[in-house]
Length: 171
Image 1 (cartoon, one colour):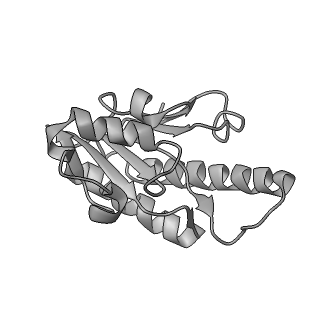
Image 2 (tube, one colour; image 1 turned 90 degrees about the horizontal axis):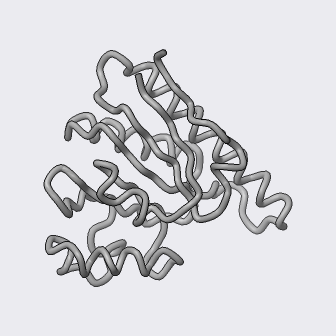
């Protein structure tokens, strides 16, 4: 059985030390920069990083034994790019024996420069795409994966306004 949870909040407060893998989409200097820089101060393996999205993009950064962070330097991705990226990290998680993953979202690169209403609709479609992909992957790998908990988290209400309850797969 696996669960997909939805949170509004800070991945550094609710993901780090709570999930085996945290995947953060963005770039150096984004709003969550304070949390990332606090993490660099708090964890010795990260202290050599000054611009982590540039210096260690798309790599597992182990900050503790069996706990890692991945920084994906993307503000926007197409559905195909995101699907490939999610598949890679889910497969990698299996190989690393991670059982829990927290991740932020990434906007759709096909639709940019939208007004507020169109932007919210686009974000809702992207959330649905991510959830659908995760559900399919977990169902397809249900007897082969150790992944039991995925949390989708954003500072905005993108995930929580679309999903008010966890999705349980394999009951």
